[in-house]
Image (cartoon, rainbow, N blue to C red; front, side):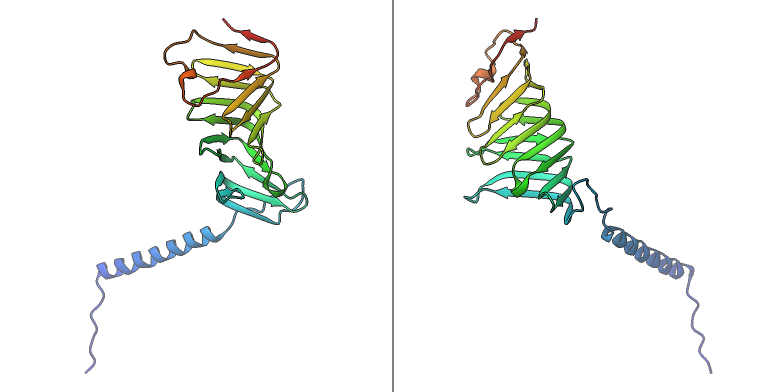
Length: 213
């Protein structure tokens, strides 16, 4: 006498359908994650490698972290040994452990990782002193701990604001300088003046300085 197996219920069929659908979606998600973005091309030539979603820490000769970098894409071309960065977010660390923040639309690391050049909407900030600098192109030499810009720069440290044609900063000395056609707005000093910030050195200026009303 043949035994008749019970027919699966609607709930069982629904469970199996959902289980199969979940497995298919998981496979597709994994497949998409394994597909890299398009290989970037550059006028300098074909890259020998590129990385996406990069978080990089660079160390000096004594093993101390002196640069931290985050970028969605990093491309290296062997022809000129230059590394190109998309929308880099940099942290420059001084010998005293003070952190300066730098962001821009794009950037490059020269041969051997030095110098760093940031281009586009470039901003350098010193959170401890509550100031920021905006310019188009900013260079940074990690061996000297020096940042500079030869494009017009705007220095802001509320409530003061200064403009100049050139900017220099030495992160290990916590010192900065604006030069050439310097103009600024300097309200009367108060008890909360930035000169009272420990370790702060006001920006040096050279050439003519005009105070805006």
